[in-house]
Length: 284
Ligand SMILES: [Zn+2]
Ligand SMILES: [Zn+2]
Picture 1 (tube, rainbow, N blue to C red):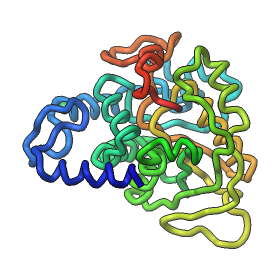
Picture 2 (picture 1 turned 180 degrees about the horizontal axis):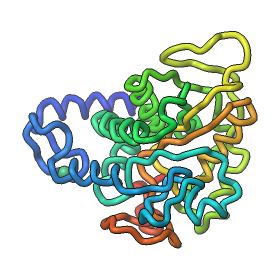
Picture 3 (picture 1 turned 120 degrees about the vertical axis):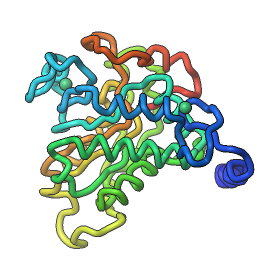
Picture 4 (picture 1 turned 45 degrees about the vertical axis):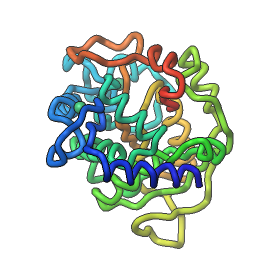
């Protein structure tokens, strides 16, 4: 309720005040859209940086192979067939996603979803997707946040791509933010067993009401951010157990991690910097 009132107040303020850029906060003329030219250019540039098709890491072209990069080929937990990511986690991307997550800013949700749509359309598997599965938020966390950001993203992307939402997975454990955890191992331990089948499908369109709900279908998990991939791989486990034929993932940002091959992309903020950022830290 407070979140709704807050959203209403923000909407009124937005209508009364000149617009600011969703990524850097500078004032922009109304006709500029939601982002200033510099931020828009940088965020769109990230879309075209080469990335591993299997895990979404941004890498130099020579490090990318059809079967995955050197990192993901050693990650035996990897259970999604491909990852579409819109960009890295630079200052502008971070600001865009943090405001979506902690302020529920509608404009940020629409812009981030547009980036995601562009990232998905660049994938050879885009036409295979039959449903979108947002990473579910625990109800306790939902009480603390103004919005369910993954669901907002999935709804926008679903409308743009004409895809239904698969609400088959629910989060059964309330866990600490992934970002504050010291290691990849700790992130996996934190989300292990966190998700379970919800036994339902509510969507923008419908799949056959009878019969297996995802059995034999191709589903794409949607989230704002991928760090270790632990959260997405746990959600994929549930979808696979329900019989999904193939599972992909689409995330707005995938930050560079220690050990990733260096790229020409500048300004990316690492996971360590996020961990120190308190409430602005991502949770995937
Ligand atoms: Zn800007
Ligand atoms: Zn890879």
